[in-house]
Length: 185
Image (cartoon, rainbow, N blue to C red; front, top):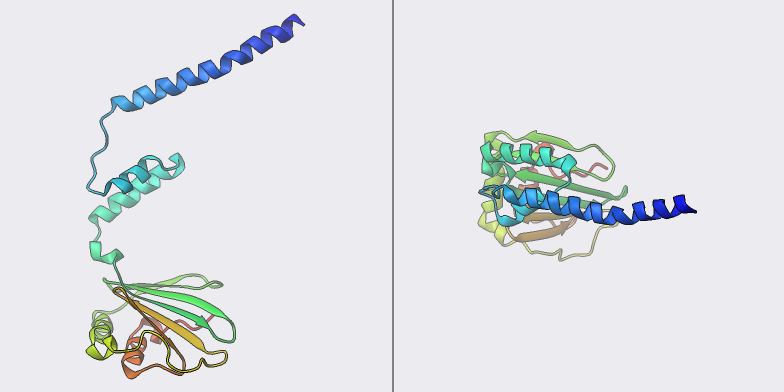
């Protein structure tokens, strides 16, 4: 019985020891000056509260981003293709620097880089005044088992189906990498 009482007292001290350790560690952390960063406060907070296993990865990513061209991460245009007989759901993102990524539900992601001439052709198609007049939504009935294309450029999304693709929208689709929007599952 006496050994149970001793164990009980020993375990009763555990919360006090844990609290002392937490306060001690917290006090040590406050002694260091806060890290200086050019990033917004929300990014710095996220990095400081991240899982320790990913903190090194985050630091490496931030160092790489600081030296990389800021345009390389800026999205120029995003195309989502859905529908079809197989029920695809694909996304193509082209960045300002011409790099692109295709993702689908089933396949491995693909990536590449457009040539300067191809990127210029895509930009010209997106900036064409005729493209600005393309309706935001389809005007006709959908095609059975057809594809739906959602093209987001700046803050505007144009949605069209296989039946209603005005020439200005078709010009944008034709200028995309890999010969057009990703329709393969």
